[in-house]
Image (cartoon, rainbow, N blue to C red; front, side, top):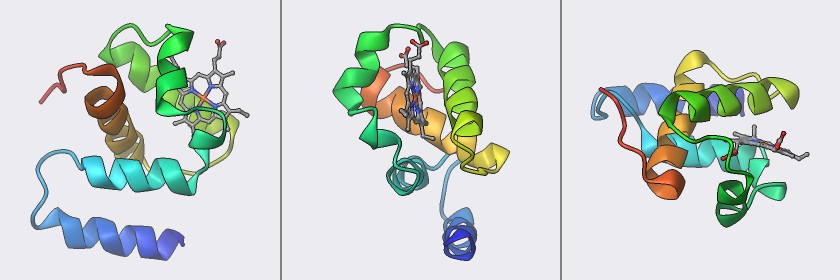
Length: 92
Ligand code: HEC
């Protein structure tokens, strides 16, 4: 699984921008974050009130559940949530 992810990261690297929303989406599904968080339910916590806080939460939930993501993966997941759930602008 990890190897597959890495391969897909490499494959995307040639075409992707600085961030990769699709990778973020796949990571969230693979890590089963959505078991606890439907995307609508995420908003109800109201803790991730801006992009840096959102990133902090993604990072701490990821650590807590031991998903072993690369820093780039944290970034992709943060960007996925920022774009699809919270509608926060994604910093360059
Ligand atoms: C076992 C259930 C559970 C799982 C699995 C889980 N979380 Fe969480 N998460 C929570 C709870 C509970 C909170 C709210 C914590 C609080 O209010 O103190 C939270 C909060 C968050 C928030 C902040 C939401 C907001 O807007 O305030 C983010 C972002 C988040 N989690 C991302 C993730 C990601 C990414 C994963 C997958 C690696 C994940 N979570 C897996 C239970 C879970």
